[in-house]
Image 1 (spheres, rainbow, N blue to C red):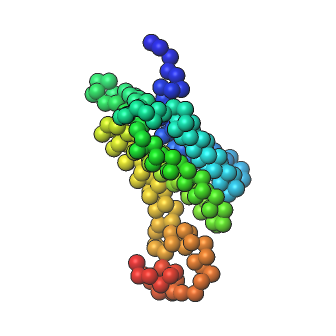
Image 2 (spheres, helix red, strand yellow):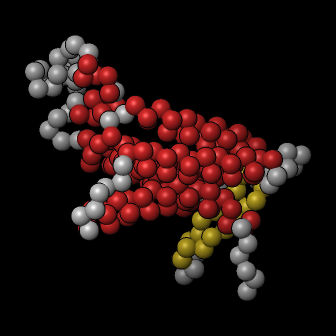
Length: 206
């Protein structure tokens, strides 16, 4: 059996890379908590997420400039990854001109999003970094998927960032997510959830 080259797993690695980085960050943070060590600072989370997103963007640029032929029509760099041979289940990824444009715009916006997180409260940074990395993986996989199983798997992955956000900021305080998403919310006048149940800090009924 021939060895698997980087080109053979390039698109799949591009899709799962951010999710693997989020998993590693979560495991490192959990391990530090188990040994009662100091948790990862918010700056470490932000820099890790930014570096991963920049590497993914660089890989996307390499794909566009070196690994893609604009003179060819149709799908290029088709990959098949067998999941269950007995069931005939496999994941297929490929790229064409349209998906490449969306891929570049998606991977280019994620680093800019990490830059804007510098002003967020430190306690909400880990959840936001994990949610962004998972969402990036889901979006990339959905753009590159060319069979139903790969697309459904990436579509299911896109729900994980929502679960992370709800687990971190959901609960009795329904305005918690609104305040976490907008650090200046606490500084502006307006009814709070504690003062006016059923309203967020902007006075908008929930």
